[in-house]
Length: 429
Image (cartoon, rainbow, N blue to C red; front, side, top):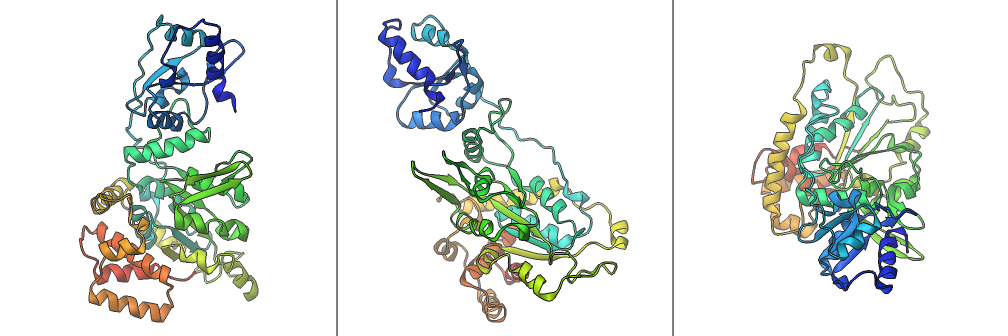
């Protein structure tokens, strides 16, 4: 059953001995691991357990004091923090009053680890990152070494919109279940940024194990999953991403049962155009040494269906030394984030009657209802389908992208200029 039920078992045995007076046990949950000296230790997954207890009609949860700040995040249920088992007995015997616990602060940190202003040049790439953050769109950066792909990916974290309280609870529950919630931070207020190395296994990315636990795609829920050098990942690892990228959840099945975890994340991936990294590079001092067949095989590591799930596909080049030296400081992350917050506000109003929060989450039916395009934009899309052989998925994803671009301009209508810009990001890599 697990050590999280130690306290419940101990209280049950003590009650049979008549030590504890009659109590409303049917309204109380006991949650905690016991040490040999009677200390009540913290356990994982408390937030989800307290929420479930409230849904089932329980009135009180008795748990370790180290879990108390996490437990009080769920309103409408009494939290009793204890340090030792004898305190539980005293409480049940009306000999002790529980200590009140203040809910943790919901204020997010304003510290940006990598500010967008330090990224010199790359105006198109920075614009693409702004669009990706505003509508939660997946983005693929393809360019030679030194173009700034990794730096820009890290800067994306600083322009993500602030999480709502509901999103904070979602993310906190995941980290609590995974045992990654810091005891000093009971509530996660910043969107996750999860970098994944290409040596990571499929299980570590999607989740699993004997007792199925969340993987990186779930730990990146409501945040960013960053896959640097994505073409170096084994093909089978990349293909397992297709389903959660589309469905926004992952179901892990084992002999003991199955469990479904959320996986609503922005995937930002970076890759070189070839194994050596300098295919079609504007760097005159570096030339590609890869044979044509090797370049083709490298590029095919990302299948067509996987590429289709990237709303933004961008080829970028290193900034020249002349531009690098002349370039002044660009817009800060704070300035860009204000525009994104306004765009997100429009989306919340648009989807207030549904469970959808971002443009990228719309299905085709909702897209056709809420995002009509004019005749000029329709003609533009028809030409693009013929010229670039866009799939049906790519068509609808382009309209979603155009809707986000319109939101950034505070436009209620999707104009041809928005569709035109969205089509620029469908470049095949």
